[in-house]
Length: 70
Image (cartoon, rainbow, N blue to C red; front, side, top):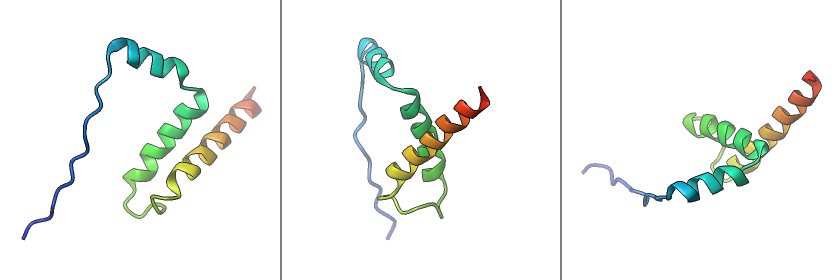
């Protein structure tokens, strides 16, 4: 038998909802999203339950590195 495929529902946003989302998103959130993308792409990466916390830890490290550059 083949593997069962799980399909998550798609979230649809209007243009104004999309704009509001990005207006409320901090640079820390954006760094965490970028880190998260890389971590979940690695099949040998961290356990999924620890990923959100690690993504924000990486975001905080990026913000610190940014301060040091100035």
